Image (cartoon, rainbow, N blue to C red):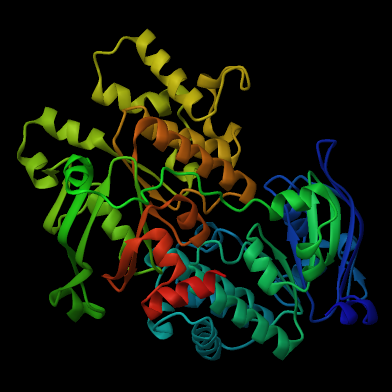
Length: 546
């Protein structure tokens, strides 16, 4: 593709692009081009300017002062009047946004939103547009596309919403696709499917792709060329193989070398019988089964509810100071299993924390129930949505203390909050008036540190980590994993880690289980499992992860 890029006139030719807000520059004189049929990846950490640079080309950044040139098929995008730019958007240039839940309209079905593109941009009638919308959904590999087309965004999983967003962006078969983190919410195998779909449509239509991503494995597999941005500057660009094999700029080298590092207390030596008896098991599950009632389609379905079994027969244990990694695609049952561990779902079989079951806790006096709740805490995927925007750091982190230790004095509360914030690397010397700040005043990695502090403040013994780093850049992800490893060593914490990132499991897990359709298809020592997986499904997951 490099030859194509140098020989063919570029489809998009950006020169000296500058962007500022209220006089403060955020993008500094960047230049790049994309040839017809080429895939260019724009990479960099959050705040590097990659997304704002791409979206400003289409006039999608309110309040931005933009200058420079952006030639597209003989026109300068930056000088087009609003009505001409609007005509291009969604027809010749489409965008896949990072968070489909906020990009999709919650009051219209998925099918209606995709069909609207065919009606408005291509002039098709309603019936034909609907049929094409279902076809486009089917092309993304979404199951039961005709039924899913009638679903609203909140009725779909994260991966399904992302597929619907991709179907909408590709509906008009654009000449240029801007894909802003298009596979963040998808499992490794689904990522490959989406990449294959984009590559197929690119070959069919000669479509060019501007990929914005912090997933370097994805970039390595997909892109023809890479452009690296740091703090609004374009520091390096070239063909993908050369950039990854011999990066010239120190920042590029830092990104490529940001793979998670394994730094846990290993359990290599076989246990004696005496050691096995002394080992403290924090969490134990035996023949765990989780099901819930669901309705069938239509009015008749309301009267014929049936049970859906999300976890069929799970058995495992997690010792003090160890991590259990749970791997599987969307719908495999791993999140349901985590909710059961947190005591949020009824279940059959035995599930105990420190040999006390949730059923025991429910029958116990309130004080005992609170003690059980305190023992296990959660850190969720997106700290921005899990932290209340109206509460200060002191209120957010100290909320657990106010519930579990209401007799604690205000002074002692403040001291505990400061100590746990320092534990996660947030110091008042770095952040003046730290306790009074709100979540929006922190970066993504700093917000995740707040979420970890909020969980640790009540001194739990088990942490459920639900995709704790998937929304973070690779360098920040490495920092957060190092922090979790440090906290585990210092406090003897047990982790239940749910992730679709195999590098994270490799770095963190002592033991791993692989789930498919509610079943545990493989389990064992994490390093052994990764080195020689026995089940074809595990082999497929590892192959897809690269």
